[in-house]
Image (cartoon, rainbow, N blue to C red):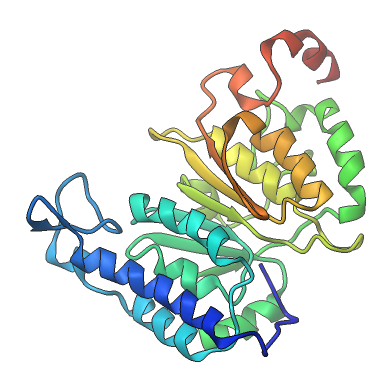
Amino acid sequence: MKNRNVVLGKPFFITIIIAVVITGALMIASLSRTGGNTTSFLCTFSGSRSKDATETTPTQLLAVLHYATSRLIPQQSLSEIRVTFDVLQILSPCNFLVFGLGHDSLMWASFNPRGTTLFLEEDIKWVHRILKNVPNLRVYDVNYETRLSEADELLSSYKSVPHCMPPDVRLRGNTRCKLALSDLPDEVYNKEWDVIVIDAPRGYMAETPGRMSAIFTAAVMARARVSPGVTHVMLHDVNRKVEKEYAQEFLCEKYRVKAVQRLWHFEIPPAPTFFDFSCIEKEDLFLFKILA
């Protein structure tokens, strides 16, 4: 998510493209017509709408101004951004959780008008830097207990830790499972998140936290969902070994619905039974129980 070494000299047309995407979202929200009646793809409430639902929010206007005048561009490509944008077009207003804070955060918030958009960031200094320019973003700082150098060991040993496995797996207060983010703010645990983007924490050096806990935590949240529907999980940087292996282990290939460049999109259903929690198949149950 963070892109501190931003290239300032990139062609200006890239910034314009981002601005056009955001402006298009606003146009769709206010001008789209179905059956002769103006409706909002971004703000649909089971067929009913209010006048406010079609009005542009201050966050959207700020996003258009920001990206039209700034040479700092989002880290994801236009094609990758479009994957999340298309989902939010359908679901917004919704609960949208983003692991990471960066130059694209205002864009993500503008895609979910009147919804709850929350960012989780590890670097408090980076939080202050971003909020200095965009103070209306909602951000919580997160303490990751893992290091990228531990990724292989954690993946090979988690099944031997009962608190990392059903029926004991949980997040809040679960200090026995190192992959679980156990000390997040209550708001994160109390909401069911419709869309989760994982583009942090840092995972490019051995001493950085890596995204193992973020991926595991998103998987547990998705499977603990009670409300109807799936949880959309977007994982960036799947060209890297850890992201790819942890996605295959916890988000499951069978739930992957799209792959665009370095981004994978998963639609994960709730886990009504033991088998639905894990990516393993039923024939592996005997071995799975032994390892657990």
